[in-house]
Image 1: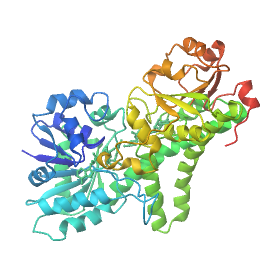
Image 2: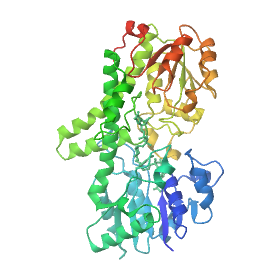
Image 3: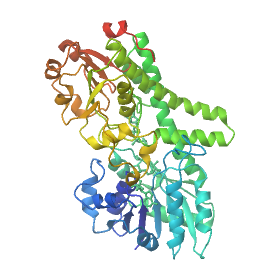
Image 4: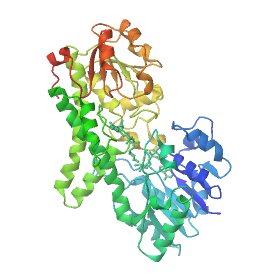
Length: 480
Ligand code: NAD
Ligand code: UDX
């Protein structure tokens, strides 16, 4: 029986290992974490992350061939294959701060693997890491070698949150990078055999280590670049009377471009895109490629511009001040179908509005009050460190209240901002919301989910990203 251990029971480690356990009943999978509370949650009825379909998969395998444990060393020692899926956040201090990946958690995991191992192991990079990390990890593992053979593989994860289970069941591809040696090839085959239980072999791509590491950063950069491209065009649409949905459709029907990932928005969020592009930028700079670094930096600059533009639009539309005004925020997660708020554009938008002294009433179906308060009081980049290292009792931001209903959030509000595309926001009773709001009542749709014409008929002044502007909004231009 092959034994797998995964270090890191997070958004990647948990779902990925649950699917491996489901699809490979003869493989024993242990998911371990230094956060005892996270492991306890994985062993309870209330899983630590919300992901459609995840609970069913976990319930089918937990206690059979899937185990969650905080006994990290025991499971690493026993495993044949060790996946490392720990945090690789952006560095907050020292060399490369604000750009480079912080490999503290990865390095300590590698040192622990080297210390406790008594048999040969395949060590798999599941976390997203800078190119050449495998070389550093190899050095750590083979230093103080006790005659143990470690083979390092890069097997980056491409799942997206909210669709993780379907992405894992039916991936576009699985990428495995390894050393071009007989031992490397054997290790790659062993990992390929695991995935081949359910992934067609033609979708399992093998490459060298550095190509696999770089492919992950490049894929995220390309995806984010599409969003920044359509968001840049959305600003031009508003200035010219073009409609970004129509432009995206026309552009996306070119089979060379394709229709996906062309939805204009208040900006992209999530724990990966910004972090991985900053990491890519840093690697380019370190390799003496400033032009390439600057090219990718623009993707983030446009994303920041889009979030600022949204805040400025809200403030300028409401007579250039939101001081003391109640603004409802509908949606705080970085996308629908997840409770994850890491790098959500909602944080920047809320901070922008708070900077103009607005009072915020926030509703998200999956995000707790504690999480929102913590996000709004946390320093940039601190959010992506292991949860047990984050401040547990944040100082509540006074001008913010968190409510559990969209109607409560919008009561007596001057404006409402839709920041996550939750399906339920499409079908709210907007007549009721309008009746209970201050007038003029504004809707700022950062995800293009509402039927703007219908809302205008009710009496709202509506702003939708990249859509032709109301006469009111034209008279109150936002300066980005
Ligand atoms: P996460 O914060 O949800 O989980 C990481 C876990 O690792 C935490 O629970 C932490 O306590 C644990 N950990 C840290 N150091 C440890 C150690 N030494 N031993 C055991 N556990 C340890 O992070 P995540 O979202 O799962 O991301 C993990 C990696 O996968 C990152 O590199 C990320 O870039 C990459 N990734 C994430 C996604 C995504 O959608 N979230 C997708 C693809 C790739
Ligand atoms: C991303 C990658 O898609 C995934 O392959 C990688 O493994 C991890 O990073 P994730 O961040 O979970 O996944 O979600 P994704 O669906 O990519 O959305 C990221 C952000 O972009 C969200 O804020 C989303 O709302 C936004 N987005 C996405 C847009 O604004 N417009 C789009 O057309 C698509």
